Amino acid sequence: MKKKKCIGLIFGGYSNEHEVSISSAKTVFQAFNSEINKQRFTVKPFYIDKYGDWLDCDLSEKILIGEIENNITNKQRIFNQEKTNFLEGIKFHNVDVWFPLLHGINGEDGSIHGLLKFTKKPLVGCGIIGSALGMDKIIMKTIFSNLNLPQVNYLVFQNEDLDNKSVKKKIINEIKKKLNFPVFVKPSNSGSSLGISKVIDESEIPQALEKAWEIDPRILIEEGLEVREIECGILGKSKLLTSEIGEVKYGSDWYDYNSKYFLNNKITIPAEIDSETTKQIKEIAIQSCRALNIFGFARVDFFLEKSSNKILLNEINTIPGFTKNSMFPMLWKASGLNIEQLVAKLVDITLDL
Image (cartoon, rainbow, N blue to C red):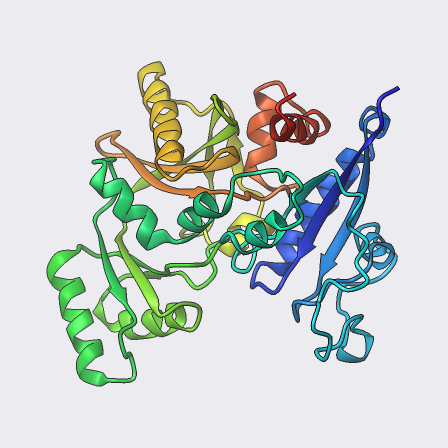
């Protein structure tokens, strides 16, 4: 029998998406420990707490199976700040494949990919460049614009001093001049809709700018249209495969953090769209991933304008959620891969099997 592959599952992280990462990791951990996958894989979990410190595998596993809570206090921290090597004591040498599930900053942005590169072990997902570009909304949209990929109208404000009233007024005037309300104000680097505000009129702009600025001094403003939320999963390396197309219908005013993780949205897979639109969405999904050097797995999000049926590329998520409410595993289940098959497939892609 072949030796089982040891999967190093990394989750948690110094990020505003810490809790989502834990939920995703629980799903993936269970999938690797299914009867079929236990024949091929073992899992070593590595939990990174909210302070950025790594816990050992035993404690990490207890968090995943619910034996202990993840609210580790300062006194319970495993590694103190005086240690020069923050990985000291972490037994990762027998890991065969890394599976990072760190959503948001300090993970999905390429940070963890750069660190893991020094271990000389392969990892599930794309590399440093694709992760960094996929996380940064401003650079991502700039590249898409240069390739003439269809997007909503947007404005960019980078490192502006929002404490300066004249600067803030200049920004507000430019938004009023160049975009139609409503608009969405977003931090360039964030996920799960954190830091995003829907702005109906001029009076709401200052507060929305401040909210985004708390997360990132680089801010994106997008024109809000009447759209359908369409999503497509991607798998592969040299050849990228697309999943069935899915649609999310949410009961809230827009698809915010609460809608994504706590409300029962209506998911339709495959989405009720014509074959030509489906084909175009899949083509743009692959084209956009290629443009940013994104491979392994990703979820590409689109808008479909209700009045014109025009396809608008929104963004790419290089480490999409794996929670029970997450679209990525749902899309692939509808495409013939259940969660157990999906996680195994991701490892096979990484190892070129």
